[in-house]
Every structure is written in C-alpha cells, then in structure tokens.
Image 1 (cartoon, rainbow, N blue to C red):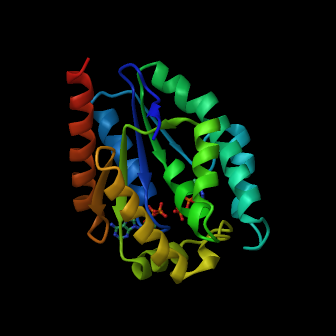
Image 2: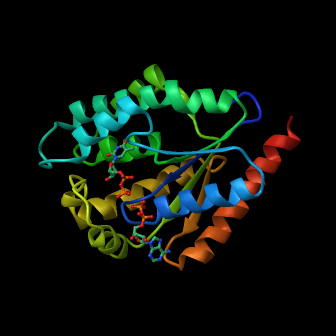
Image 3: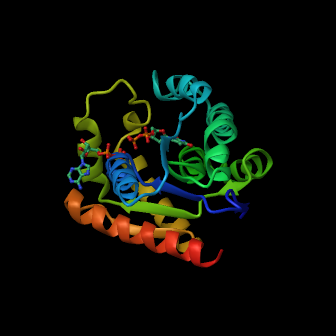
Length: 219
Ligand code: ADP
Ligand code: TYD
C-alpha cells in the first residue's frame, strides 16, 4: 500500500472493527494511558475529527440507509478524511505527537469497498490519489457480530444509518477486517474484544507500547 504519514517521531495508530466492538472505549483508554506515560497524544475519530469532516459526518451517518449510493458515500467519506488529514492528523504527526484515530481508511475499504457490491478497486484508487498514507499501527478489535450489534443497538444515538443494515453486514465486515489484517501483518494487531474492557485494554496498551519502542529504536 502507501507510505507512513509520519517521517519523524510521531506515531499514527488507528482502531478498526465492526460497530459496537469497543473501538471508541479502547481508543479513549489508550489515549489516557499514553498521556499518563508522558506521551503527547491527539485522540480523534472518523468520520469527523475536523470541523469540516464533522459536518460531513452528519450527512453520512444520519437518515435513510438508501440516502446515498455507495459511490457518493465513498466520495463523502474521502472528502472528510482529506480534510481531517490536512488539518489535524498530519500537523500532529509533523509535531511528533501520537495520533490515535477511531477508524481510518480500512473502514472505507470494508464498508464502501464491499458492503454494496464490489467497489474495492475504486476505493483503493481514490485512497492512492487523495489520502496516500497508512497508520503505523492498526488495532483490530475483533468481536462476535451478534454481541457487537447488541452493544451498538443499546446506545441511544441518531447515527444509525449503518447499524440499520443489520447482522449480515456485521458478519461480512468482520470477515473482511480479519482478511485485511492477514494481508497486512506488519501493520495490524488483532485483539479479542469479547472480553472485559480492562483485559482488552491491557493487550491494546502492550501492542501500542511495543510499536512506540520500535519507532524510537529506529531513530
Ligand atoms: P465502537 O466504538 O466499536 O462502536 P464502543 O466503544 O462505543 O464501540 O462500545 C459499544 C458499547 O459497548 C458501549 O456502550 C460500551 O460502553 C460497551 N463496551 C465497550 N467495551 C466493552 C467490553 N469489553 N465489554 C462490555 N461492554 C463494552
Ligand atoms: P462510528 O462512529 O465509528 O460507529 P461505531 O462507533 O458504531 O463503530 O462509525 C459510524 C459508521 O460509519 C460505522 O457504521 C462505519 C461507517 N464508516 C464507513 O462506512 N466508512 C468509513 O470510511 C468510516 C470511517 C466509517
């Protein structure tokens, strides 16, 4: 795929996984742990993370599941990511900070790339053209789809456009994320999210610290 976003001491960590798998919980906990350990951390999320991208977030996550075609949706997610990268992620990495992002381009590969027909080649071409970077470390929180959907549905939110696609989508997305992890073993760490949050967090912390040590040893 493409290059590191961070040529310097910064580290770019993304969290991926199906809805309700515990990504946001673990991203927040990792951020707290790394701040306590003395790292300079930016915790952010997609879709969103910058003012313009948060406006696009409302467009893509609210309303009828058929509101956008898969192609239009891909353009909206990519526009949001480009703004987020330009204004938040890249400046933070250039300043040597640790960026923790709740979802990044792998979500587009999965959701827009394969949830409604095969658009994966288009997703990859647009990514190469407009984004062009990958995280240093991607933590895939892997989880049983039915249990994850139960957790996601228990949240009171109006951002349910994707959750409305239901269990079959969650099952396909889980398999797709695991396949992506297998294809990119240097970037991905797969963590079992079916356990209690403390146990999951301990594994997440170990994976992140190990990658931070690798990067500082290489400099
Ligand atoms: P995601 O960001 O992947 O959609 P969240 O972190 O928002 O997932 O978690 C979804 C729901 O499940 C939240 O209500 C959260 O408090 C709860 N949750 C998160 N991790 C766990 C866990 N390990 N065990 C039980 N419940 C959890
Ligand atoms: P998110 O707020 O992370 O939802 P959750 O906390 O339930 O996992 O993301 C909202 C939805 O947006 C989620 O169903 C996945 C979808 N999504 C895409 O389809 N493409 C993308 O590129 C991204 C970042 C998210």
